[in-house]
Length: 78
Image (tube, rainbow, N blue to C red; front, side, top):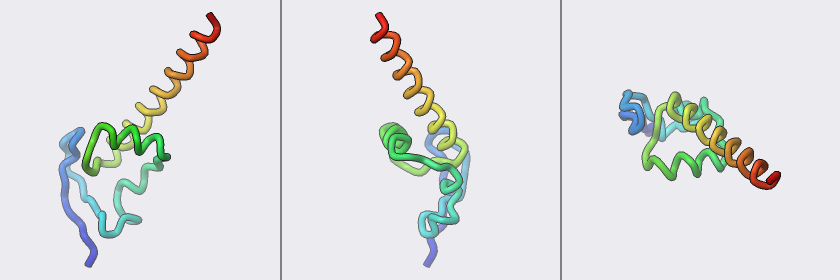
């Protein structure tokens, strides 16, 4: 039996349909995440998030990584 449930996103509190029983049709599948994104998100949240928040957190992770690399380059240049 396919499991679908309505959840509230722990980040934005908006309701969304979680399809953990049919993951390929779940809304979260629309957001492509690599392992560093997953690590970043799982370090902050313990449950499913809506696709909008996943996309925003992916961007936040990428920005943090860029800023860290930039900072490292600046420090090496001193």
